Amino acid sequence: MRCLALAVCLITACFATGCSFDTAGSSQSPIDTDNGDPATPPVDDPGAPPLPDSGEPATGGPDAGVPAEGCDAVCPGVCDGDVCVIDCGDDECDTLTCPAGYPCRVTCRGNNSCGGVNCVDSTSCEVACTGVLSCDSVLCGEGPCLIQCQGNNSCRGRLDCVNSCACDVQCTGENACDTEPSCPSECALDDDGIGCRSTGDDCNSCDQSFRY
Image 1 (cartoon, one colour):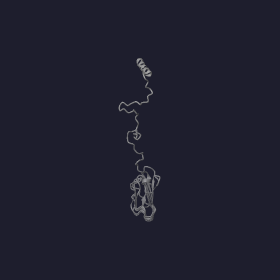
Image 2 (cartoon, rainbow, N blue to C red):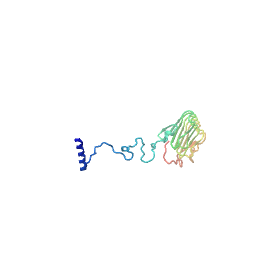
Image 3 (cartoon, rainbow, N blue to C red):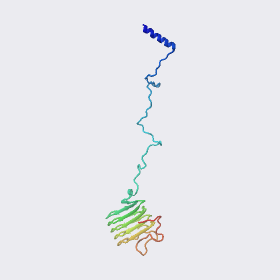
Image 4 (tube, rainbow, N blue to C red):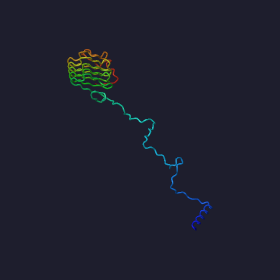
């Protein structure tokens, strides 16, 4: 009874003097007033992909989907720098087209090789017909053109360089050049035999120097 009376006296004295209780140190978490759950900071989704800086979808590198370019991609032979070099043995290269936009050098060393050589779209054309019965026909474009008919009975068909800025056709093989070649205007050989020449007036209109 004495303890109870003492406690009552202390409580009465506390209310009389306005004392307060310190609640600091309480370990209870603050309550989220919206849903009653403890408040937690937002967490970014680690699986979300980052947006590119430009706001546009990311694309492949500069070479993605770009086809191969250069001489090696279009030359049916091998490339010496930017020159497409083609070698034809016996009965090879029945129909041969040089790649557009590149110099072309063809050697028809085999018998019955190079039934037809077309280098109309090449920047320059050099064809050596050294095999027997080689080079039925050779067609050159607007670039420099050299056709050497060295094999016996070579160059029996059409030889056309009429549109070339410079053209040399040399018929040195036995019975070579059955048909007179079509040369640029005023550039056919006169007393020197059948062929074309790039020397003399108006027989070389190429924009730059060239070397066969």
